[in-house]
Length: 312
Image 1 (cartoon, one colour):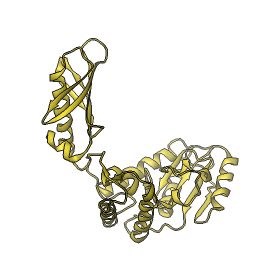
Image 2 (spheres, rainbow, N blue to C red; image 1 turned 30 degrees about the vertical axis):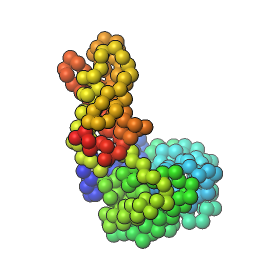
Image 3 (cartoon, helix red, strand yellow; image 1 turned 90 degrees about the vertical axis):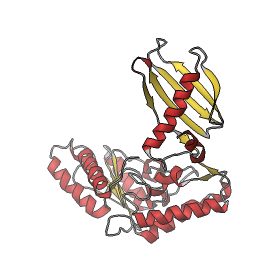
Image 4 (cartoon, rainbow, N blue to C red; image 1 turned 135 degrees about the vertical axis):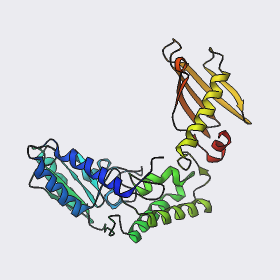
């Protein structure tokens, strides 16, 4: 996986958000000054909130589906051209009526606060609204205060335990627990101390059996080199077994029955697409083979770590 460096991630995310909000303005310098004030007030810009963030959990919802973006919640109706920060977000609808209704709806929700900006962002004709979660406090490093983040995370993890059918591993849930961008145990919202404890809590809950059997999907715990090797091993084995005619077939590899699907994309032998699956998605790999150059392009595999490691 790509190495995560906190200062670099902060600089890149803030720079991208600043440009997004100011590049189309008649006076981009004024917009950049407003953006700097938002950074001071709301913390660093982020790409995605963790599922437990108050911005997502405070508003009432009409169903129990996982919410990962404010636009999925009725209270935020009217959001448009939105940038997220650690404590809240700024959104820039073109309609002044929508902006006013959004601010009023948010301010009627305990724990949230909204206000309109006097100057434009994103576009000269937009009407920016700033929304903040008043309960979110930031550490000196710009991440959410540890005790609060841990409490909110635990509340999220246990609320649906009785209805769970499987336990999800850290690697499956990492983004919904840490937010994005993230590393193996930290993000722009959660530092390594907090993220490490979150992972220990999830592992303890999974090992208790309260969710049911553990389901593995992501293989991000393995290096990119190892994941690529796993995909290549499975896909090359499928190509070697393929009779150039049958689209779907099975073959044995290292004691496992592999189900393969191979297609000649353009019916000219130039590009061959390959999918290999073991079990009911216990392990899955896909890619493309270009015969003229003997070139194999693979996607990252998904499945169970113990099974995937058999193909290293």
